[in-house]
Image (cartoon, rainbow, N blue to C red; front, side, top):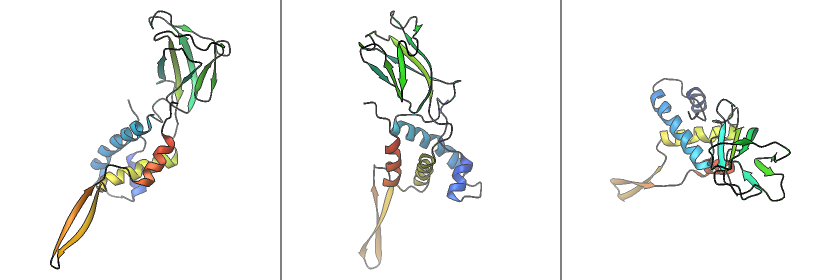
Length: 190
């Protein structure tokens, strides 16, 4: 189950909302905005923090290191290899077969990890116990953005002295202050 990046109580405190009139709207937006941010940044931040729900990734080998997709990596539970296309796995030994460096699993062999189709399985915990403050702030600002329908810029245009026309200009980009924060957390698999 995907975890949200903020709570209703935290958002209402941030937005200065004291009534319960908007609770249903906020409750509907929080999981949607959380999923949007996770998809935009290509990582989940909090879903794999505990060992009760570890992240499992599969690799084919043929490289000297595996780049793990859920930084920051907290604990490597196991690195395993399979010579039968993932039917059975054998656990590899840390410091003998592999070593962890930041968010990478590096082969100790000068030849790297041998190419094996579905040949490697890495199980690990990753992410944050608490969402970083700047990221949570961006999530809350994005909720406000959607609540207020800020996607439409309202431009008043006078046609005649007595008639004013409102033009709605749709934008497909995030507000710059939110995008700057999210871009800092975007996963880069290169």
